[in-house]
Image (cartoon, rainbow, N blue to C red; front, side, top):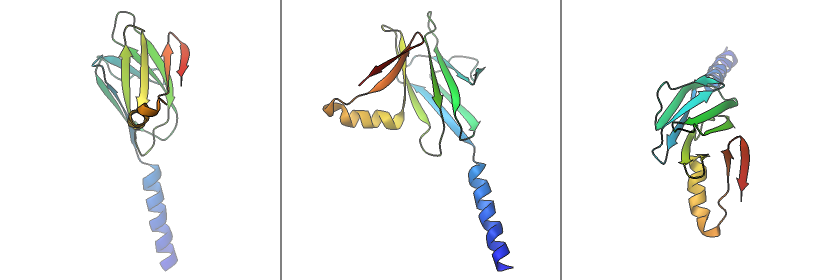
Length: 133
């Protein structure tokens, strides 16, 4: 009887952990407005400076961010939300027509390492990937 109660409690805890709903938040650091597509489905009808997507599971999602500008510059990434940090910055550079999407944790780490000049990121420009180390 005691073992059965312990097993039921453990199963309840495991189910609650696996059934946890996650979210992704994208925030513009340049105050540019954008649309977010999740697996090809538009998530915000009007362009915004911050978009949060709720009700996600811990699996990879195909994210496409399209800037609200005349050229509709876009970036595509695969992102897997976790129970930790699911906040991303969206930086739009209109001169170079590219978007940089980084996890907030990575931004803080890059600021620390800036003196060591180890600032690396991946940017997408017109469908081609650019990598800078």
